Image (cartoon, rainbow, N blue to C red):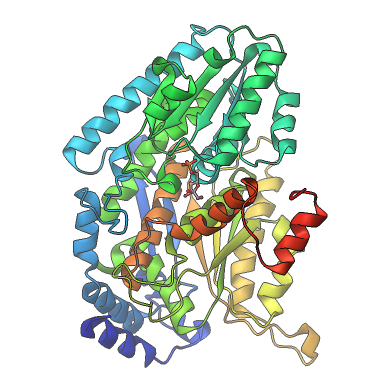
Length: 509
Ligand code: F6P
């Protein structure tokens, strides 16, 4: 850690936090800590209100974190991200997911739009029946090759689904069998989504899907397969015809790949225009993040609060509750984005980090979660910063009471966490002063979903810069994979516990 960073942290550590109630005595607080992400214009203007006023950030902390951002080289790192420089230093690669949305190095943006055009043509050809009747898609992928598509299809295809999509990630055959049971093989296509085209779960599931098609009487099973990958040669070697291989650049990380051909199931399910809208919403946030300085930069400001709670208040988790059924998979998506990106113990330079890095991200949907886990948030001993996400426009056509009750509960929880309530009976006492932030969307359409995800990508990046770590590698996933391979190959002795488990399950017979 350089002296300027150490000095900025020392200053932040000496800050005496006020309570939320004390902070709200400042009349300008809401204005200071709210902001709006916006896109479109005129009748088509839309956005997300971002209210961080119920966090403990104040003007002093913001100034302190701005100093930390300067000392950490935030502006330079951000420029390097958008310029397509090799900021993923441990893998000597750029991180060019924003170019997929049209914001980045010119040559990368051009390459992305050419690849999108190819993907669009295939999607539209399938919709037009060029490949025969297609009613179902089994999308096989894992991690970043599954979580984004699953989230976006679930969020956007409730009113209109042109093709019924089933995302299968787990190697547990139960997952694939469920998809088989829901699909008519005669009208099913299979997408194999894998950046590397080597992931064992995905390749095993793909083989089984092909076998299922063949055994169900489909005459040319591999002719029903589309490959979504940064390793197109491997897909062709596997047997997929080149015309159905949709490549994406190596510089797009797995957990940042929804915008590339990995988003194929989204476009197939809801149509190209919706997919394009999702890219446009994300691009609006890219431009906000690229062009806004200091705490007015909303993802950076969110990262200030994240760093405050993790490093200065010792919070080990952060919770995200979407008061919207359509965002039920959002916490799962965020878990990979945040924990795989920033769950590190060394800096980009390979030095031990000087404090806690990514907290555990968890969450659920409101109001369900209120009746299950909110007890701990209100009265437990852990301090857990909470994010609420909601949409002003309802996602349903039922009586307005449904959406009214949903939103009032969302806002009531934030107010209750903050205000608390004093009681003479200790069991009924609420300490209050518990932080939350709220992202209130005008509507949850494709552009908004893109904006929400891009906001969190940039928030994750901003956190990484403030901590000095590289968010774009994930070597921590490798050791377990290597040991599984050794076991699979029948090699080696392990510890007594692992040997006993292998013996008991008959895997070493
Ligand atoms: O093992 C972790 C990981 O590499 C993730 O980063 C990635 O999203 C996932 O596996 C799937 O990888 P691939 O897309 O190469 O199959």
